[in-house]
Figure (cartoon, one colour):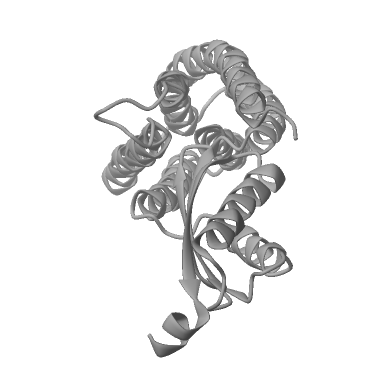
Length: 304
């Protein structure tokens, strides 16, 4: 059997290195984009581009959160945290969702105020060039980070990738608004900044709800749960799986499983079944950190 512990350590180190690399690239591009969008937005008179720039500022904050949370989550279990520090990623994802919602609400409030007060301006062509550049960069970042996040099962990276996608979509809205203002519809720019705000709020709410589900120990992967049940029920001396619970701690899974066996098995035979079940689950699921196996005689299980 392969050295499962050694494989896990190697995977965790690789996961952290990939997150650091992604974080550095993302941070560099976000600082550049947020700066150029806010500066050009103010100079060109485009409120939509300024709003998009502040969206990119929130990207900078989210990238810092990603780097810090992954560093914390890879720390080993200790007396105060026997299940490890994987929940740091869920907490970070929750913070990211809150930041997005607050950013969107602030931008939306400003947009509505400008529309109601008639603070309308026509942006210059420079705003168009910058927003097109932003769309291209953000779409490339989205595809790159979502691929790394799924490969390393890093929920915070995946959330950060969708943040980049929301930024690309909001830049498209800004592009439409800026273009509309330039061709003769000045209010289009302010309306676009409101649309950008709604994009940001929607993504923030989705990310926040997902993080809350994980913090409340919702089933992280229903398909994996069913696959484990099917696999364990094929083992010798296993009648069926009585119950199974999966909890996610960052990239790691902790599993409680009750296995129903024949009534006449000896204590040693029952213990052997538990060891086989535990080893089988870990062998087929590299992200499983710990498995707690309960052995239930069939007569006890049927009478409960």
